[in-house]
Image (cartoon, rainbow, N blue to C red):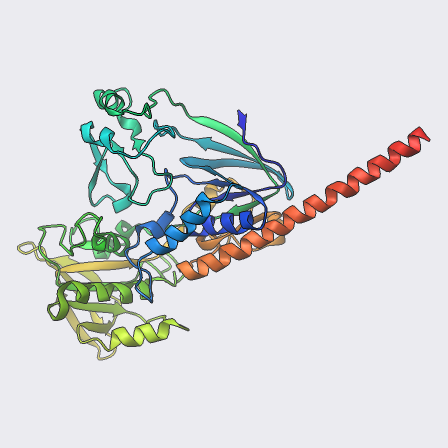
Length: 443
């Protein structure tokens, strides 16, 4: 077991999404040493998979670029990727985390030239695109990936593909002998920023996500709009590649439902409002978006955006909890069934594509959390003094949008800094007491 250079004056940040990056940077820029642990091969988290933010509709690359520039210039942050915290012992001011690091089979000599990917033949579902496309067995996680280094899929190790990748590398960056490592990381405080996972839409049986190819999720739809995504930025139906000009958005798909997620995820309404503009952006007046909703939750500064979308001639709103979805087998069109609760009219509405606005749940389920913290019934970590020096940030603490996640992460970093400062302040005091005892003994 190898120790990272860290002490009880170090802050451990677990999770390298927008919340974890924010917490790490805020702490480091306040003069604290930070170990940032990310389970994926690159930083960025869910934000890196977005096409645009709401409500300004700007691309998230700008926010990530700023944070990456800060991170590259910050010597106080020690980054561990492809790494997971599998256990934590100790108390506030004196923790030891056990970190498991998976081999990426590519060392820091990599220039991201891509020659290894050209010769590798094996392909796998692309996790970054939620499985909507394939990636090579040697791959860069995404365009803005940091570290900007390729990864070899463990499935090709021991095959001819791995040898081809090694032979193609001119920089001796392929290391097929890399092994899993385990490290012990000391820390005085921990910021837990492991983010969120999209709810499994296949569990919502009446909507047929696992049966009908033209029923997709909101996160998949987001990747489709990205020019670097699975369809090159075009809204195409998975079943036949036809342009999806008539798109239905179903709100609260699995949320606010005692059979699925009891909580409101807060982002779903705004996400669908945002995505409805994508349809108009792609097809102008020929495109049509229909939002099926229980109620629209767009508070504070989001109200203006909701009003703007509602005034659009290409967006319709149907107040209804969709009961079920069937498919026209001849055309592949999804057909939505339900009752419009404003006029109590039954409908069977046909669309090109259906997008399920699925909710968020914590990435790490409460029953496998390697830290001893208070968790609420929805699986999010509560703010509680019994948690000691462990603080949740971003969507590990609640269902939050990007803006609120960043604010929450900053607050958590400040709380962690307070623990470190108190620990540091206690050291001279105890040392002084020992010195007095030593002088007394000598006297």
